[in-house]
Length: 102
Image (cartoon, rainbow, N blue to C red):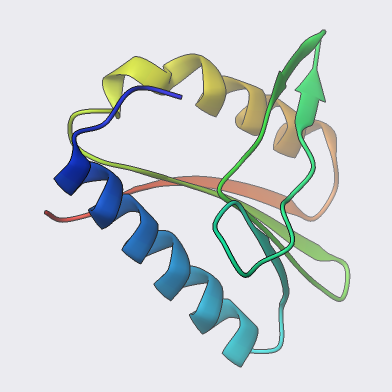
């Protein structure tokens, strides 16, 4: 995970919390890497492991969501690669990277 400014970290945490809450309201089972949520497990591909901000499951579908700030986006490309590879190797798994507005 890239270092963020204090404002960037706040923006990130708010975005993760809102996204997790919205998914829950739509019936998804959500794990999120923020307080008051169960932490998602790390995702490992080719001996590289990373923990996403959100893993949500509903029926057979799984969403892996990573939130970034404009400052941290470029620095975490290896992390997105792990999530994309994992999604490609598993049916009904979708990976996305979102950028919060500051």
